Length: 176
Image (cartoon, rainbow, N blue to C red; front, side):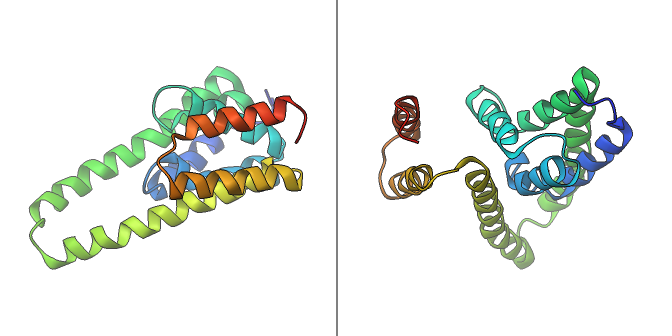
């Protein structure tokens, strides 16, 4: 826990992220990494990746990463501040947009906007994956495992948990 964390500033940061997180908290992982690791230096890249791994392994929504980051830097108050700041603005915006979205669902701009948001979201998720890979993979073997995992997940129907287990075994054996 970091005593120098201003909860109001932390809340403003996550409130702003909340409004651009089209597709959920995972799409703004690169900015969270930049802010927490590079700008504020509240944690290392490895610690950030560990928190992401915990948030993804735990059942529940992907916004759990926000709660863990808040907890790491400011304890319970930070966890609550970060979670509320990430959830409330986007929820209010979503409610307002849903009202307009429903009213104009049969218009051309509605279809165009829907088609445009999908690749934007995919690109943001890929950027998050890139930042995590860059922070986690310290050797060429680790990078090769990550690249192979991505290829296998995209090209086959093998469940990613099997690949996670295999990668964990490789790490346990000390090959990475």
